Amino acid sequence: MSARCAAFLLLSGLASPALSETPAECAAFWSGVAAEQRAMPGLGVAPDEALALVAEFAALSETGVAEAHVAGYRLLYRGLIDGDSQSSDLFTRIATRCDALLPRP
View 1 (tube, one colour):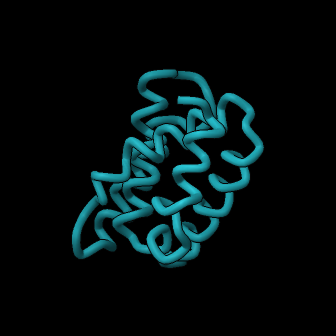
View 2 (cartoon, one colour):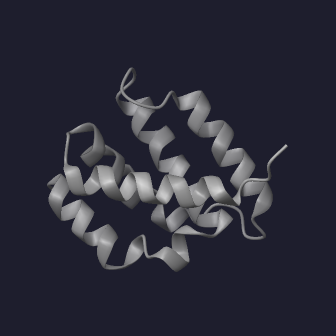
């Protein structure tokens, strides 16, 4: 599946603003990043950083990680790494919305 196709699938439903703003979706988002990083070490976000974010969002969520969406977020991250501009834009928007959910010290 191409990065553009993955981005289209994410844009068409998986990463809707309502879904991506929940802690469970954010945990799935960062879980997908961590999974892809383990498969391709050395690119982008370090797996330990992504896993720390997974733990933070899972702790905020009443339902844990939205496991059904992890594979889609892996594809999105792969598109980002491959240089797809749609994937990059979508990744940034989701990461920003997720960041806003974390409590500030």
